[in-house]
Image (cartoon, rainbow over all chains, first blue to last red):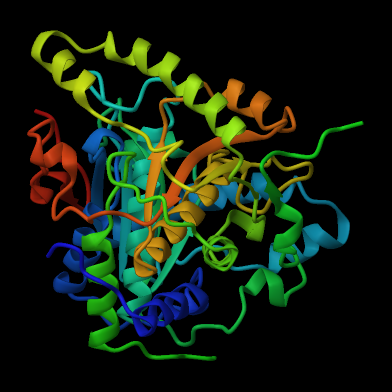
Length: 218
Length: 218
């Protein structure tokens, strides 16, 4: 498999996947089952991600059990009530109308953990976070492959991670990096919902790119 | 662009990209120039990544200047000497033979920063790290698009991040997430180098996947 050359058409496929990938929530998941084969494919793609020192510091809990989902959903409700308070007035009212997770609606949930090293890891010394970052690369691989399989994926971050660990009986040393909801969708929206709702605008990329260094502050 | 359906062939393209993606170091970069158009395409793909609350908390410094590269390379040398001491005996000898970066060899370096929020971000309350994680998703998008353009990318993590920030005149509040080297390659190896060298083995994925919860410890 040495030196495979990818074509313009391959690049266009990848760019389309990135462009059409969306964060999917409970108002948009269908209940159709997701096969074990599909879940396995997502996890295989996760395992192809780069990892610092080839440490592959990831573990996955695949959740289909309704009782476990209900516990995680209760965790979300509690954290989301607190989160709503951080927004004021009109923004808080809009926040409270948003559906921000699909824990119960998605047939499959996947909790993704970082397993800290028990011995020195090549490349993980000056910037210790690169272990967790490897797990995030694995998640982005899963997200893109989900889209390629026309499967929706949503990342739920409004969760108390210690409480998720307790619910899932996770080893104390593991760190929850992400809680993902996976299922078929009614529709892949053409724009991110938060963009459509004017919650946040797309940034002008040119303002976020600098040449050789940041400009000198006078 | 609603509801675009991707095909089996699209999935196979994506999987091949993931399978053939490698971390590239200085022993494998060619000096052929990388065009501004290629760099722009990578950054556009970064900006298509998911981000918590659509916060898009990323900034990029594109470095072609030899003097700046030399300062970053000196930072690497110093951190790498310290890192080598964490390994013992045979492992330390092997470590010292490894080429772990391509800062000077790669025509383009890209420093990727996280810009912390100045107001509440939707979804970034219970797990504050999701801001940084959004930046990592952007990096994985760049890495896959680089491979699709038959461009190599290497992630250098053996750097003192505060010193990189000083060299690049970065705002104090920004956090360095990654320092990337980008260029055309002599060869995309068929396996990760650390796997070929028996530094670390590929994990058996089945040992890293659990159903509904981690097993109860007795």
